[in-house]
Length: 426
Image 1 (tube, rainbow, N blue to C red):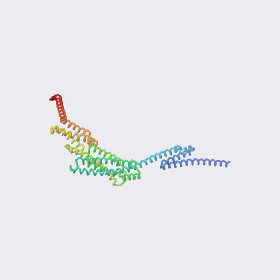
Image 2: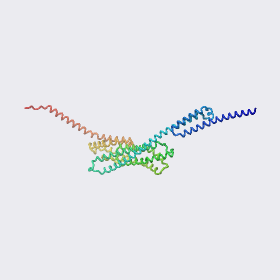
Image 3: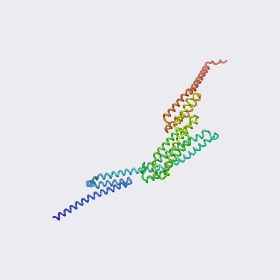
Image 4: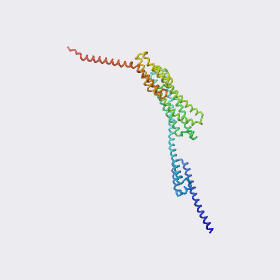
């Protein structure tokens, strides 16, 4: 009996061990399979591979569904369902990332083509602008030497003005292309340069140098500086150039720090180039201001109005104000006719077309004068206008009187002719 009992115990123990071993094997196999699938998700490199892994997850769920209760107990606090759902979520996230990457890959290819096109267009415009700059400088020098024996006075000046307009448009167009080039170069990379991989940094540096991003910015600034040095500006021209300066400065404020971070451990020459760009921006701003006052002083001088020269906004307001006050007070020094002619000339050649429509808006935009200062000048101008109005009204009155007398004479002559009897024929 004891032997039989011992044998039964051994049999039951073997059955229990076999059962426990089978349950353990099931749990182990489930865990091993989930790990394999998880690694496959991490290693996948295409959306197509994600579809295959998705089928593996669904097959895993079907295969172990009958062991759900066992797995829930063995994997606590995880469970059969939570692990399957985690795999599905991880796959969905990876699939979304791969879709984004593939989409960005297409965008990057398009950007590469765009960058090459922009670079070629910038090179072509630079060559065109070089020729225009040379022509403007040559014609400006020749114009000073010309006499009436060679050209009419208008011909060379008109030619110069046309070249200046072409050159200004060419410089603005190239600046726009350079802005697009810089945007395109940095668009496909992280905004924070410091957190980029070294391989990405090297690739970006290679593109920046290959397409001459930094050298193009420097060349643009140098050409813009030369342009304002060799030309006299109109008010509208100065305003457009100042806007151009602000646009390019804004772009550089965004891109400059990225390039500085990019070359933080690079060549010393590149760091010096970056510093020179900041210096060129400051120089351009100074040259624009200098060109503004030079052009305004030239305007008054060429129109024969004695406004004392000025070099900044406050001096401009003060000296122009003094000129207007002089015109208001010189009633005893000039005849009414002379005062009227001077006012009309100033009004038609300077005040309306040059100051009101061009220079005042520009100087306000640049912060060189205030609205209050502009209003003070306008008030003085109106006083000058009022002081010459009586003289300016004499001519129309005289014309009206002359016309009235002529009408009376004509009417009298006509009436006399009508009432004079014709002589009888003999």
